[in-house]
Image (tube, rainbow, N blue to C red; front, top):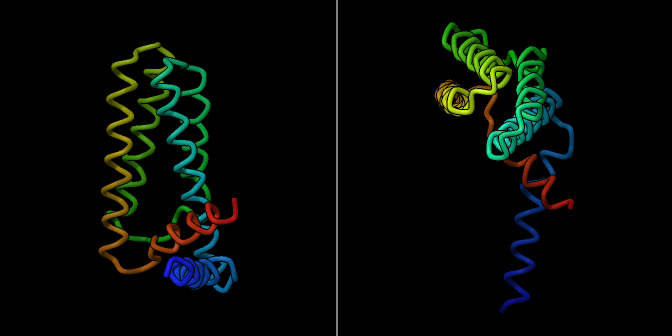
Length: 147
């Protein structure tokens, strides 16, 4: 019984990861990599926040800003998407400024604001039903499975 479950799980994992790894949709793959980079940088900002390491906060917040300027970032041309992207950048600008001032409470609030803009934008993208970010989840799972 356990062997059958393991084989079923392996088969399902293969079905999920093969499309993400096949490169059949290079644009989605590029976006998935960009979103993974964004998530990694955001987690490093949070780590810097927890450790009160302002240099780490600034470094990874600047990475997030650079990431948001990449061509792959601009997947939709809707006013709301542009608004969310601009809110994200403003939150990061505030976060960097507060980190330079060594204002931990200000950095914390800016981090929450930045995170909320991410959530709102992802909700908007899901509602559009275009350029779906579920491919990001598959790429993430594929990366985890490869480790």
